[in-house]
Image (cartoon, rainbow, N blue to C red; front, side):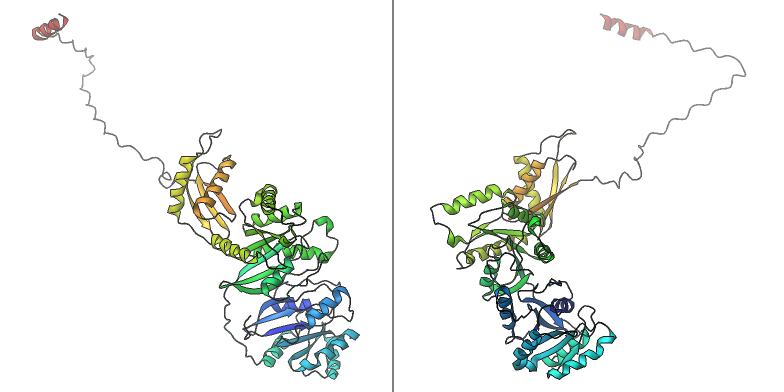
Length: 492
């Protein structure tokens, strides 16, 4: 992250509306909001344009006085951003100040020059006067807001611009795109450990307790000249095991990252092996046409028996026919073993996803495929493939024109799919094939059949006048002597 980009952190005790304010400022439902205390655990960061200037906004977990379990981990994580943040929004509830609020005030005294005391839940005019009570706490900048209704947000942004020494811009600079890498899988497969290893800092809390990660945690890193954005998601469990609203929203957010990602890493525990849930997640990824790599984590805990990797790969291929094309990598996210090979594979997948093939190349290959293996005959006659073209990259889609789509043999579509992967440069990514019937050009038939030219009939001679008398038929002429001689000669 460039140091010229200001980092703005939102901090406060639980249930003051931090995640609601975070979503309000970034303009989307990025953080999960719920009345349950302690929903946000990790530091959630998002790109944000403050008055036209690029900034990073961070939502933190609620700081509590408890020093046990998650509460202590979350509190220490939240307080760790105070030194690095360029601006701090200290959020409190206008209706209630708690011992945790007072404890946080003392923690923030050394950072008072870069802190704004934001008094939240000023939802109507009757609460406006409550803001004045908070000036007594000695903070230079106090702003009354309603994160739920958007009241006072303009004033908050103006105060931030002034504190950071920035003037509002009209033109917004565009950021270079990053390759988005999503980590998906069941709980406790090592997603957060791998995210922390790649980013080289703890962006996600790591714990043995299932469901530690709730929101989608975003981090950034570079590898071999490519800028990456990594999306660490909540573990996806079966619906029957999801027993509260927060986890339900967490799982939905995790599934939505498939659409946002360029490449998905499906994390699988090497020790526990595969499950039906892994298959369902894989099907979701393939259905969306995303590049996917099966990552067997915790390889450092395997017994080391000869051919163990090969045996596990054979089993995975057998149980995962839907991912027969996808690469498989063994890694240890804890030690970093195999991670470099994994990232090299990611770059190869990304190149294949964005690969395009000229239509002439597709049709030259198609001729060879159909000569080698023709579609089977159907009930209504022969099935034929005329020509094809690539219609999109990332996701990779091809369109083939046939004589009839109805009852076209599915096994031949699979054959075409395999040929495209093998011969056109897509060996390790999903390929979608659509069929369309070739329609004849109807422009010549629109006016009906073209009339054929016929010779004009010869006009009939006008009948001679007979004045009412009958006309006898002319007597046939007898052949002459010469004609008789010729006929007699032929008979002989």
